[in-house]
Every structure is written in C-alpha cells, then in structure tokens.
Length: 377
Ligand SMILES: [Zn+2]
Image 1 (cartoon, protein in one colour):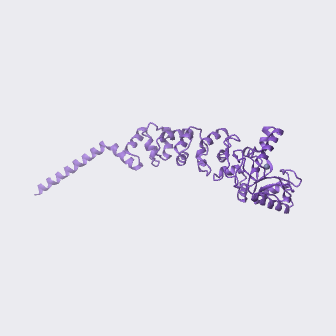
Image 2 (tube, helix red, strand yellow):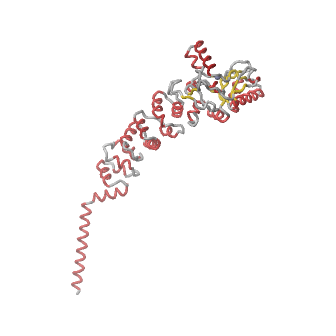
Image 3 (tube, protein in one colour):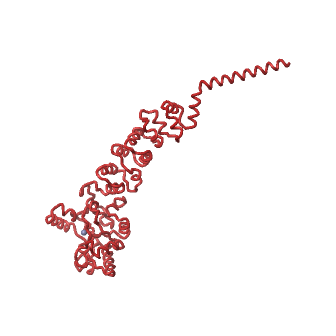
C-alpha cells in the first residue's frame, strides 16, 4: 500500500516537472514575441508596428509618447521620414488619400504639428493643396481663427503675403477689401444703394441711374442757404450735429452734399483737366464711385467758409463728436492706401451712430470695417 502511493506521487511530480520544462522551452523560444506582445499592449501600437519600431531602433523614443494613429499608419508606408518622427506623434490622423504626402510637405514648409492639425480642422482638401503650393504662411492658426477669414480667398492671401509685409489681421482685411486688386478692377455693382451702411469705394459702383428717393434740403443755417441735399436720415443727423456744434461755439456748414452721377462726371473730368489724371485720382471719385451720390456724405466748411482742415477747432470738435450723430471721417490720414483717397479732413459720411461709434473706437476706416464684417457688402 505505502509503496504504491509513493510511486503515484512520484509519477505526478514527474509530469509536473515535464510540463514546467515544456513551458520554459516555449517561453524561451517565444521570448521576443512575448515582449513584443507586452509592448504592444502597453503602447497601443499593433504587434507588427512594435517590430518596425525595434528594427528602426526607435521603440525607446515611442514608448514615452501617447499613441499616434498617424505614426502607426505612416511608418509602414514609403512616406515615413525618420526626421519627422516627432511631428507624426502630434499630428492627428485624417482620412485623406493624400494625407501622408500632404503632412510631409506641410512639415517641410515649416508648419508645426499644431498648425497642421488646425489646417486639417479648418480647410478643405483643395485649400490644403493651395497651401502646399505656396510659402509658409506665418500665423496660420491665428488666421484660421479670424471670423473674417474666407477660405475662398486663400490663394489671394498667400499671393498678397509674398508682396506685402503685413501683420496677419491686416493681410486678411486688405485682401477682403480687394486691395490686392488694382483700383477700379473687379468692380462690384452695388445692389443696396439706399442702405445707410452701403459701401461705395473704388471697388463698389453705384448705377448711373441711381438717385436717392428721399433727398431733402439741409436747413439754411447749416448750409448758408445754399441748396445742399442729403437723404432724410443723414440730413436730420447733420442738422442735429450742426446745432450741437453751435452750442459749443463751433460753426460748421455743409459745403457739398448729394451730387448726381452726371454732376460727378463733370467734376471729375474738370479735375483731370486741371490737375492731370494721376493727381485727380487721389482726391476725386470717378462717376458712380462717389459717396456723394448716395446722399449720405457731406464735405464740411468751417466758420470761415473754407473746407475744414486738421488745424481747425471745427475739425477737433468733429473728430471728438461726429460719431455721436452717426458721422465718420471717411478718408483719414495714414489710410490713403486703404481708402484710395488722400487725407480729406472735410469729407464725412453718415453711417448711423452704431457703426460710426464702432469705427471711432476701433480707429479703422469703413473699408476695413466692411472687410471684417462679411454680412456687410
Ligand atoms: Zn467729399
């Protein structure tokens, strides 16, 4: 009895020993695979990718980083560039047939991983191709965040950026304002000439037949009895402004207000004859391009019946107060390249108090304002 039991135990022990040995042999044979399996579980990359990392000697770099689908995918393609390894780790993977090629080109151009992620978040496939065909666009992430960035204008932004050294806000604003086009080219026919926020400039033209429907004569005391007309809303605001100025001891008159298309045509032609084409272009609008035709603009005279100049008390008063009545100095100093006109201290445009106050606070021209508010055209 005793002997049998002992033999049985011995048999079990041997079996256990054999199984253990077998496991050890299996483990030894598959050691590397088991390590790879463990590393795959730990990092999230699949088994074959881990082997590629080992072949390339980069596993130690990878294991410290969060999992990257981009790296997992690109590393087994011909597009994998070892110099861009750290970039791939931070670029969000996109389902795009040219994704690998595109990101390599964007990295080569100088875009950071964050910028590439923003580009893919905000731009369509065609726009990304346009970016790739151009130089690095500085501040791209800030540009894409601007409410007035228009994807349709991307090619123009890039072209203008090569020509001009502008900060990113001005770059986008100026192209939106068409300033990358020559004056009087790519002209838009104005569809809303009676809107008080209508923009009239060297890219926006009024019809030759347009005459405002509610022109009224400005009171004698605000026009020296000369027959000056503005649209009702602008006329009322101008008279209020004129009266308020008087209370502050300041005398202003409207020197020229509404001008018809034909009148402007004659005026412009006379200026060209007198001053030559180039000079006339800096201060006189071609017919159809004058704010005076809207009935919302007026040139203002001082107490001495001269056009207002910057040294006048009347000018200082207007700069500090005109926005309260909805008026805006339309062609300010230093903005000649934006407005297309020389500094005109006397030319004020009625825009209503809301817009005029915003322009006063932002210290920008109406052209820039419209370029940043795409709902206004
Ligand atoms: Zn004027």
